[in-house]
Image (tube, rainbow, N blue to C red; front, top):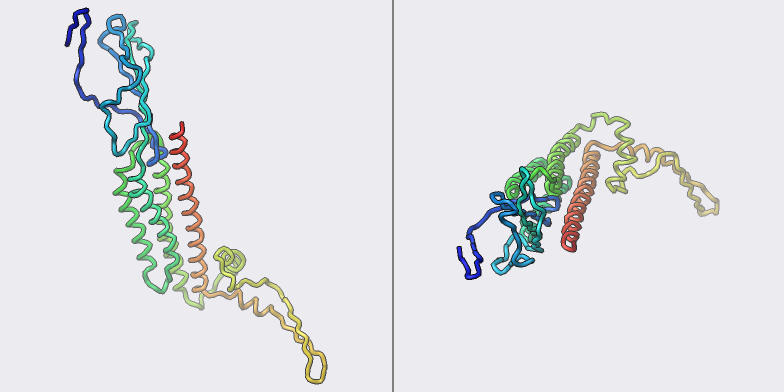
Length: 299
């Protein structure tokens, strides 16, 4: 405590204070946090101590750069006096705006998670005869689960706001678990005997819809009916002959698919469905967090 000749008493208390504020992890790892701090003199009333700023802006002379956070702005302003038991207490407030440095999290979290998500779809590209279909699907599921435990410490744990990255990870983990069940279903179809009768509704569903969705054009792609092809030829004597060919039998044979062919078709259908879901979910995740990052940066 220092006493000047003009009667001023200067007290510069030294200390390191740790404060906390609520965090909004919606756009993690490209999130921006606003920390609102209020300092009040609860021991002395406003009549005894009036808090003022020596300078209007926050002094950054002793500020050091942080590897995880980037300081966007720091504001200070005089807030309204707090009232308690008919007494007013002086208070000042600070508003600190921080933006997370996302390079580390993109390289170590987003990029590996996205690659592992696409590996789930390639489970259905592995032939059943290879004998590694179930093993590969389980390996992808377990490796994804293990990786989630490693990055769980990096993701902020809070229930106030929902992190879009956490929703994405839960969705991909759900797809990986369903992929194991679908792989077992495909293997079951592949291992069925040829003398097992296939239901008519399953044949119609396969020939009319599943084959088109599987992008197979060379199997069972003809229309039902009795299309007749007429071909006119001339023999050596100049007599015109007409040859007709009924395709009804061919279309009937085309619809008689085997269980192995059905398993192959289902593999292609599941692959297309998974690729569509993963591409849409991944694109949506990146779009949301990038928009949130740029919006907070320009605000």
